[in-house]
Length: 233
Ligand SMILES: Nc1ncnc2c1ncn2[C@@H]1O[C@H](COP(=O)(O)OP(=O)(O)OP(=O)(O)O)[C@@H](O)[C@H]1O
Ligand SMILES: [Mg+2]
Image (cartoon, rainbow, N blue to C red; front, side):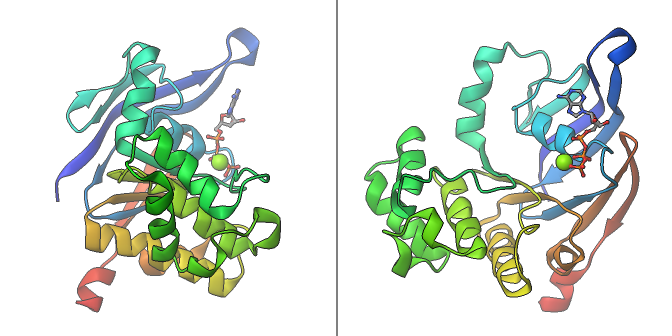
């Protein structure tokens, strides 16, 4: 599988002097097209820091992150928004939906930001693809946790990102909603060759993933390969 993201010897230090925290101490790993990669590790081990640097939301202290062959560490910050817009979809904990906008408006606004043509129609299609065709005009307050998370997934898919980054996407979900969300995400990797990176503590995710990277104290510990795809095929 083709490497979409290659990380080498990545270091991230927060703060300075007595307040200095070494969040990442030399992480090397890669993310490949078509795979579901799971990152697990104890609280404070550096997972959110790592996924945020991968997505160009946070800048690294040193090391190398190549996205599609392009180095982003040291890139002037003004270049990052364009890169994010072009390559990434983000699904972060807590949904971050706009409460005053309906489901279709929440997705459509992202389609507009990504320069998608016919944003409203595309938003409706994306919501349909996650099974929410009946809820286009519902407000977040009137949706269940699983439905809100599916709106967040539909929104992350605006603009056809090649890499989907999700931080604890199932944490707030019951068992059935959690599995629905995971099926949608792994389907994207399998059928559309997207790379899906999921940070989680949720063992249910392991049924859907290809590889697990364990992060411990800002380092990559073990790496495990899952053979789920072979079993399914
Ligand atoms: N903005 C920040 N300023 C200073 N220190 C930070 C900041 N963000 C994170 N840290 C520290 O960096 C380390 C890694 O944090 P990070 O959020 O990446 O962990 P995590 O693995 O995502 O944890 P969790 O599972 O609890 O979400 C922690 O020690 C944390 O306290
Ligand atoms: Mg975190």
